[in-house]
Image (cartoon, rainbow, N blue to C red; front, top):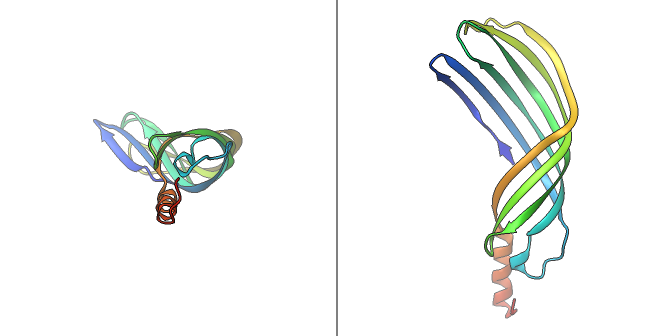
Length: 158
């Protein structure tokens, strides 16, 4: 997985900045046996996941106000998740996932005064166990398509 919302916006003097880059992966165990290739990777599952990345988040509402921001070069999260994968068609799935895990981040807290980047840095650290994952995704089963094509060539009736 890769998450990279890296954007700034300025709406009539109201500025919001969200910069984030996360990379990670997940391993899943499906809780039932598949009867055929077309039912593979469908149904309930449990998983483990891990993510790492960095962020810079700053929000302010008016150019005359003091703003607060948080910047980190090392964010880490790992945990367990559960979900359900719905079969949309033979090769497509819709996944719903929620997870709880440990998150750890060393960050710099900074103030931006009157939209000028005069920053006062304060160091901090955050670590806790809490909900760290929720998602909806659509997936395409590439390997299953190949397996199905090979079994058809061998005369398998699946």
